[in-house]
Every structure is written in structure tokens, then in C-alpha cells.
Image 1 (cartoon, rainbow, N blue to C red):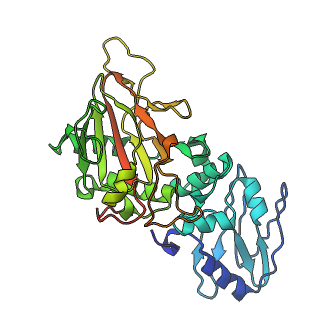
Image 2 (cartoon, rainbow, N blue to C red; image 1 turned 30 degrees about the vertical axis):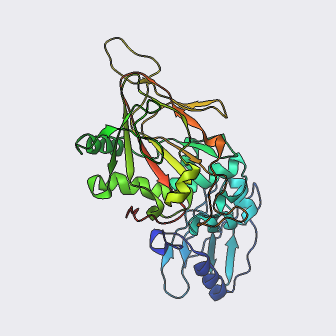
Length: 356
């Protein structure tokens, strides 16, 4: 993902500086609980603050173009007259400050490098994943643990995309017994079936998932493995394990982070005559948390002690497994369970995974 996306409606920092300089602005502050709006015939500028929502029409310097920022510092001007919404006010609205916004625009690579509060994580994830409507998106984000981060994002993928991933996996003809470890051995630890989908096998869902996982992790889509789709039948499971192993460093395949997507939903209990999914929760024993499968929802976590932005981090360094990332896919009680994994690496691993 590029560091600036002017064609997508973002106001980048260089653009903002150029506009500020051209207009010779003297900003004043809209304080908490107070809204000031200036309307002139040469520029209609509307600012609405409602449930942490701010919108303004920005006129570019000298070219007559307009852009609407989705978040961050908002400017409007008529000649030398201007207003600004300061970082403190934006934070009070629940919108990211310019510092946090800049982290997102620069692939978010620094955000996860230090411990964050629950609200910081919710703000970041909402703006990263729900680009068109981050305010409503906040309602779908659940921070199960702030440090190390363990986050559930509901509705990250549509039902239709989840169904297409399942269909593509079934019709790939490549479903086989899941394997574990550096030697890729069959084991009773993991009794599911697995296939790998390349982008051209399921293009729109695959690229959408890759794009949003990239925004969420702050790392480019090319750092992701191809889409792994996993099927669990009744009684099948994956015992406690970590997605990264220290031995992976020797193979150049260190798995920094995991984005686990549920492709179907578990029922509260089995109904007579209905073969719905029951059981199959993802269990994180270190936090005593169980996540129930819900179609379109994602669980995101980091697998290593070192993370981008942390002290001394380097993409070529030896990455140590974080034992707190241990988790298990509990046995399916009835029905079948479908999930898809995006495993994220510190560098481009040559899979050709693309976002959009």
C-alpha cells in the first residue's frame, strides 16, 4: 500500500502543508463541546460533530480540486480565513490524531510497536479496516487483550465473500489432511483438512482479505502467505499450538502475525434435524478466552515477541515465538467449521499476494 492515497480521498501531510502555506492560515480551535461553523458563498464548508463524526470540504490550493479526508486534521478556508479541528478535539471525538493518522498513512508499521490502550486499538483498527465508515466500524471491534494485542473484528468480510472462499476451496480439488511443524507432517494434534488458494482462484475475496489484513497489520500484502482454507468435520480439532516456531527463522518463514477469518457461524446449540456448527471455538489459554466462530469475523494477534516499531526491531532479525500466543481450535461438536488464515511475515516472501 502506498504511503499516500490522494486518489482515495485522503489528505496527506505534504498536501496539508502545501495548502496551509498557500492560504497563509491562522487556525483557531474548536474546543470540546463547542462547534463554530463559517459559511461563505465562495466555499461551502460543513462540519458536523455527532457521535465522533467530522466532515469538511477541502479546497486545494490553486487548482480548484476538492478532497474529503476520512480522518485526521480537518481544514477549511476562504482566503486567509480558516478553522481547524485540533488533535485534542479529534481525540475527544474518538478520531485519531495527526500522529496516529500518519502512522496509518505510512502502512501503520509503527502502531503496534508499543503497548496501546483499548481505545487506541479500537480507533486504529476502525480507521484501518472500516475505511469508509470508521465511526460505525468501532461497534464491531472487540479488544480481548490490549497487550499482547488480541482483537476480534466482526464483519470484516461479507457473507458472499466467505461463501465464495468456501466454494473455491471445495472446487479446488486440493483439500488434503492438514499438516504441522517445519517438516509438514500429519499429526493427531491437527485433524482438519487444508487447501491453499492463490489470488486468481478467488480474486475479489482474496484481494479484499489481503488488503484489510495489510491495513490491520501495517505490513504490505506481499508479506502474506497465500490464503489457507481449513475445514473441520465433527470431532476434528487443532490442539494447543503457536503459529510461529523459532525453527521457521532458519527457513526464512517467520510468521509475525495471524489474521484468522471465520467462514461460517457456530450455533448456540444443535437444533433437532439441523446440522449446524456447534463447538469449534478458538481458545487462548493464556487469557482464558474462547472465540466462537462467526461468519465474516476475524481474530488478529501477533505471534512473536518482536513487532514492527518495537525497540531494536529489524525485519531481518531472529524472531522469538511469544508463548502467550498459544491457542487451539476446539473440537467441532456437530456440523462443519470453515476458516481461512492470512499469515503475515516481516518481509515480502514472493507469493505474489496482492491487495487493491
